[in-house]
Image (cartoon, rainbow, N blue to C red; front, top):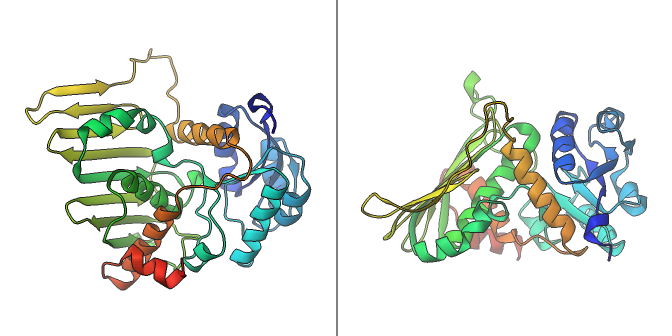
Length: 331
C-alpha cells in the first residue's frame, strides 16, 4: 500500500459545470488531477483543459489502465446498467485504485442487490464539525426530534447526492425510520410544470422535503441542488435541550435557555477570504477516502434505501417504508 503522502494523483469524471469546483476541492485536498473525462459526448477535452489534465473519453478503459491513486466520479458513471457499474468498481478494486463518488451509486433500488456502494464524498456525517461532536451527542441523547438541511449549488452534486447525505446524517442519530413521506419540487416548478420525480436517484435535480416517522421520535429533512450557495444545519431536541450544528460550529442550549457548551468560529479579519464550506467538506472527505485502503466500500447503503423510500413517497403521495424498498430490491 502506498504511503498517505504519495496519494496525490487522481482521475476525475465530471460535468463541464463542475470544473472549477473540482479544481478547488482537489487543490484543498492536496491532490493533482492528472486525467479528466466527461460523460457528455465531446466534452472531455473541455474539462481536461480546465483542469490542466490529460483527457479520456472511455470511463471503462480508463478505469482499467490509468496509473492513478484514485478515481473520483463527480458525475454519474453513465454506463448502461448496474452490472456494468459493478464491473468498473471491481476493476478499480482489483488494481488497488480507490473509487469515490459524488453521486449516489447504485442509483436504482434494484442496483443495491448488484453491488455495494463506493465511498461518497461530501457526506455531512463524515465531516467536521459533526465528527467532533461524538461525545457531546452521546451526552445529549436520546434525541426526540431532528431537523436537518443540506442545500448546494449544482456543481457540488445533484439533489440525489444531497438527499442521501442528509438522510445518512439522520440515520446516524435516530437510525432507520418506520416510514418516509416526501414532496418533490422539480427545477421547472416555477413555470407551473409539476413533474413527478424520476424513478431513480440518477439525474435527480430540484428540491425535496421529507418527514421521517420513528416509534418515539420524528425528523424533518430538506435537500436541494438549486440553492445559491452551500448551506448545512442540523437541530436536535432532547430532554437536555437543543443542539444546533452548522458548517462552522455548534451550540447546546439547556432546558433553562442557557448555553451548556458551544464552539464558534474564530473572528476573521475583514481582509481574510471566507472558505467555501462546500469545498472544505468535500476536500476533507476526499482526503479521508484517499487515506483508506483500496477496496473499502461506503457505509451509507442504509441511507440509499431511505432515499429510495423518499423518492417513491414523492411519486405516490403516500408514506413509504425502507423495509419495503429492501424487499422490492431483494436486499
